[in-house]
Length: 385
Ligand code: NAD
Image (cartoon, rainbow, N blue to C red; front, side):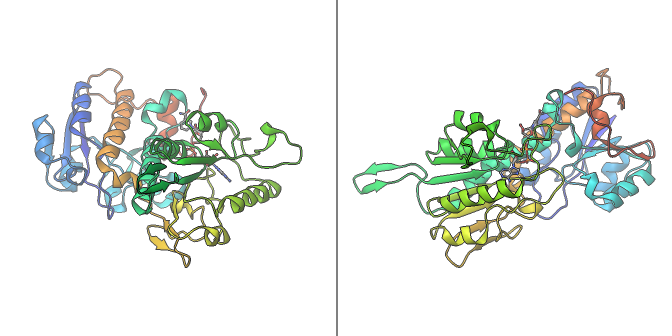
């Protein structure tokens, strides 16, 4: 089979779904590999680097798709890209089937099999293909770097001949994959880091990384009973009004002292909860920075504008970029291409260049959104955790 990689055409998208290293591994599975000319350039990979390991370089998406059995890419496809598919082809990319009914219908009409990488079940066995985690890790890292780039002071405290410098105070809201990555970077840069999540089980992880878990004050005084959002299989659920009020009161108390806020709070299938309100921004010191990783889903901060860096009336910088992984395209491409390679390894059990789309396999079934002319989204729940 030929695995072909399209050049991303979404404005500003710099990632690529195949690297020379991932291609070498795919070839060991018996596949031939091809890229659309220039596909790796914005991630720092030249056509020559692909040619050097035996990847074909083809001019244009049409030529690439016409000769490839499996087409891989990063971003959800455009309609024009779905048009390139046919009943003998498989597409593997982000797809967000829940938000792209029309695209799903078009893929079904084409008879193509589509594997949505964003639908890979988040079970232990599938961690090696979990693109949501690999990209969230990069986003969390980059959010702190971006904050540092906009913040006018050191992260670490210093005592120098020219004066004493206090450490920056960083608050991370939401300690999932992105939040934990952000905590790791902020603490390693020497910031005094605080973190909050509705899921109490993350307190230990937060503390083991050198950050302080922000507890809420409930009258019953029970340390473990303060968070309420962990009722849905390890994922956050919307907070009760009482809990939300406590949470906002705590953030209001912290706002004047915090220099950098990184927000990552998301609830599956919903708009991002608004947690850093306009009055909290107004209470922050000028020069403070907010990086809102939830910007694409409406933002955790009242003032966030998606894809923009804005400055509030009181001089707080609010960053709502939605392309953090693409801003580290070389790293993101390496990890994404490895996730894709693992998916293709599972799809090539004989290591003989033959694709076996096994719908009995929980991971493959979970991620397959169209199969043999039918829409197969949403999938049944996975059998194994
Ligand atoms: P996410 O991006 O959906 O959410 C980010 C974080 O926001 C979560 O930690 C969530 O609890 C938090 N949040 C939601 N509402 C909040 C609020 N009001 N205030 C503060 N925080 C709030 O989550 P994610 O990073 O994709 O991961 C979530 C969970 O899934 C974690 O437990 C993670 O370890 C788990 N996970 C498991 C696997 C696996 O087993 N293969 C892989 C990835 C993630």
